Image (cartoon, rainbow, N blue to C red):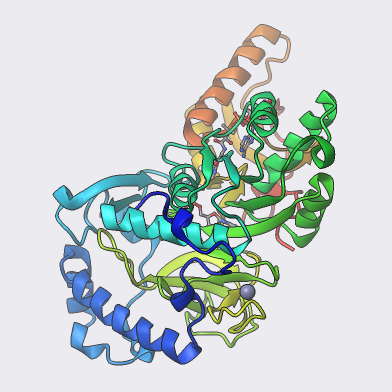
Length: 445
Ligand code: COA
Ligand code: AMP
Ligand code: ZN
């Protein structure tokens, strides 16, 4: 239902009070009930039926939350292997939307949604925005990419459900973003953190002081790793509170985890997900407080529930209670990845995608280096690649080749890297496994 917030008591701290303030015992009882429902529902998917058969497992074997560990993990590769619709647990005619994740080679991953999935997803986002003090009289500007990026429609639907006037500004065009902020009295923005520093730079050039010339008071920042220092810097630059937002397309999109006003970790919504942290090598659970890989099980998804999905994000449990009155688990900001995926400007990229494109150019040798930097408050990628043969005397040919490589890379990775062609043998030769990526942004801290 759209505009649900306007009928609510604005002074209530919670959007779903009954659920948000549940005790641990109540959360776990609800999780078991929903896990059993989800597992039964998964048997409508050819993929999970086969997985359970192979593991000698039946839905009735799941009698406690600990029994979850009997279920095999689901991976991104499983999603690729069943592309496009092999994971569906409902007939396609019941699905009303799909999203497809960036950062894959070969087949992308496809996530299906029913109307109910979209509504529940919007509820999670609305819950988060209400939690940090936004109300229907706020004006919410979404500077995320729309289209397949779930940050676009995900925040759009959530902010509308909460009842705010919503400005679907989408990514880019900073001058227009600033005009909207001023003209529409924007009080809250969702954006990737690296973009907000760029936006401030443009504000400075335009002589706009966010403290005096805007009504901004809340940022939802996420979709890419960032440090506590980056958050503080953004808060000070704008005089705005910035809350960390975690999500991923496979789970729905943004909405999965969000900080409350205490800013002491992300509350992951345990009525929607079961959270496990496992050792990425042994796949055994790690104790609270220890860093491991985040594994998530969906509890409410209709179109495409996922059991024990390996997110590859590294983090840890901080606690299971909070002064805000919510006992939903608190998870630390992301500390790294257990694979080689990079997230730049909110876009997911694997080095192999870049390699695949470079290999299509016969003029290039096989050695390349990807460097990620923050330059003048804009995040950038530079791809240095060795030329098979030097032809630096033919300047035009060099420029044309550089442009062609840049265009081909942009089509593949959805953002524009700087490309530098260098003589063969000039990039560092690594012993053993080649070092292909140097990340100078220091986002994982
Ligand atoms: N979000 C919003 N705008 C961004 C951005 C980001 N992450 N990164 C760059 N921009 C802006 C730039 O400031 C620039 O606008 P300006 O010159 O008016 O200030 C414009 O987009 C183009 O920037 P550039 O760095 O040349 O772009 P690019 O070709 O490398 O591609 C985007 C950048 C913005 C198109 C691409 O990174 C994108 O779509 N990012 C959004 C991803 C997203 O929303 N993820 C959320 C997933 S849930
Ligand atoms: P996508 O499926 O495109 O939404 O990308 C999801 C991935 O983005 C996650 O698995 C994380 O690696 C990353 N991500 C999303 N939100 C955050 C966040 N708040 N902090 C760090 N990384 C994030
Ligand atoms: Zn809290």
